[in-house]
Image (tube, rainbow, N blue to C red; front, side):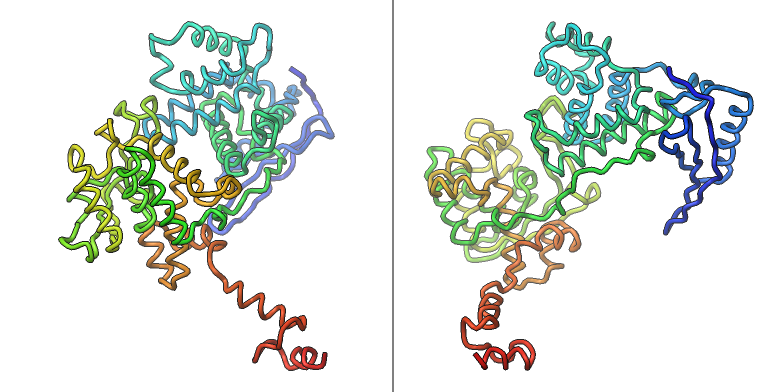
Length: 479
């Protein structure tokens, strides 16, 4: 452990934000190394920590160059490896989060831990390590499963022996190496900014927890100067959005996809004509969640109260593939009402007449699996329909690439039709702010008229009455 007696402690720096005040204790070890900083919400705590640093320096105590702390403070941390810390963090989150969040946490830490091995001698295959971590180690239930395959058990034993001490995460070089590694995919190419941001947040959450349980002397993240890759604004690529003609053509193609295709038409139309998320549509029960009128020409109404996202049996409490959750961004028990237009009413009535309802009144079930509509079926039939009606060039494009893009088409189509954004946001189960940020690029901003006016401005067409200033009109007319 490299140490130094070269220590300089500065005055407390106070930062006043809009709602909170932060007191930063600042000090430097070993001369030219970066400034160390630790934030406190309360002035008294900041002064106490600063006093401890001053006292250690006056006693002539050595400071650890890696952590920046006096050696005596470093001894207070628990002797824990990065692997043990990651498992504890997973166990902390497991009881209170959704199945998909459990899976996402496991995937993020699976990307982190292979960069934190102290040794590589006898290292198992990389793919085996990733499987052992994601499927077994970072699954609270599976980690203690007596039926673990022998190769998984051996891989986890090697990981436990060779993982770095958690205290190494306080080293800026190691921390920066991990963060840089998270920006890359397995093939070395830059990863999606959205995925990188998600994984970084989970990793830094683990660091914060490590400081809380004293596996780390402090959370090293706030003091690190690291710039994440620029993230997209979360907006939808307008190339993904199908127009009404394209959507109807795809629905007709779905009906032609073997025995399964006809029973899937109403499901996809529900995403398009009502804007439901797939996890909302799969859980619809009649009449509990859908009021159907007696005539095909009338409006019905969806009363949505839950969602069933697909996470896989390994991540749900029920042991089923789909989790049982409240509506997204809604409290438990809160409902959302969505109108069912006549074109969808007629399609659903035909669907029920032809395929009947599943157990418990389920509207959409699989051909063989009557308990749920399998996600593999949803994605497979959609891929086949796209391939059947699109040219290879269009099929390779993002146009209606996934069933979820039908929901995007619902929102953008209604916004462009002039329906109030607040109403569209309510129907889609979003806030107006999120909706605008997500779908701004999909709005028809009058591009044809804009181009006509630009062309007139450059003299390509007769001037448009009322276009521009007086001087601009004179310039055009004088050519």
